[in-house]
Image (cartoon, rainbow, N blue to C red; front, side):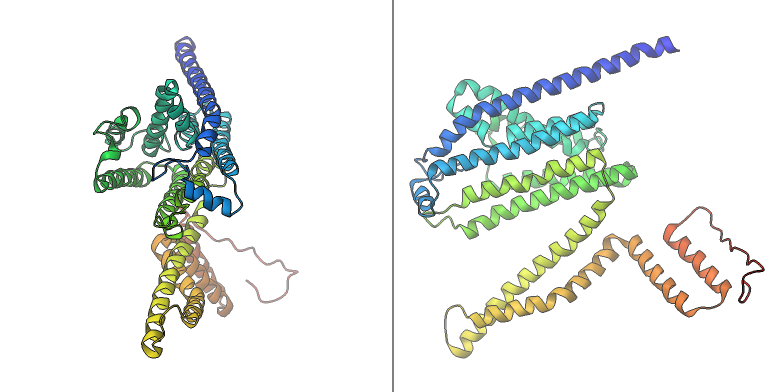
Length: 430
């Protein structure tokens, strides 16, 4: 038997060694490409774009003048974006190396580390694209690494946390999502490039991919995952949901802060700078999930995110509606046009007054809707505390205690043992 198992064990070890070696080689290649791209990226960011709209954070002449008026030179702006790319990519790389060091024998940990390197160092930063644009000889390699970064992250959404495609159709959805992106990376002038599709079709494709991931992960969570895998899934979903929400919020809010109609608009640079920080939530939560450190804390984070995220949205909507309504009312009564400080103060006081009662109502609603078992257990313990303060009969107290333990902990077997009173003890017998 030992002789039969030896070749299989040797084969597995060789396969793991080959996978680790491939990861190291791919990481070194990706880091080298990124390092070579930094001088080219600095040159690109230091060069004013000739046609509008500018891309990848480049500035127009008007935007450069706006920065100069703020005391920021073009050289400092370029150096800042180079530093931003370097710091963000270094964070992704360090977390990938940590996963590789702690879980190199686990195939899913190895794939996750590869995904973090390809996406966080080659795909998401703008620096490698500058290298491909300025030196065509680097273009095929850079585009290949960037495409692999998108592909690995897409397949990761279906493979996490155990490395299997669950349900079976997810592998085909992953391929269907990545095939149209081949022209985007390798044949950008082709009419098949998704960037040339109508915006509505692009949005529909992205929404379809996101919905397929949600359906697949929900099915896996309810039917396949173990308790630890469910906690891992919560961490990853929480991190990606926050990153996606932040990214979309920046997409829509940045133009409001820096309207594109202004000739000196800095909306694109501001969006790029903020998006680097938001996307760091992805590798951080991935590392926590894969390393399985204090996974139970995610329930509290999710609960607080739901409560205060909903609270912020509702209060913001109430504030906007009250400001608009109050200003309209003041305009009708007084005939004074323009912004009224009184309307702003009244709306602020209204939002402040609603904060605490609204937070409590949202907390109870979310506990009942998403944490029903914990909510019921808390209510049961509160009823027991009331009973303990009022009840004096030992048998009634024992029955109440057994019932509470049964409802909250749901043990397979339950019994209660009371210590007999010794002769030296005084007081009524138990």
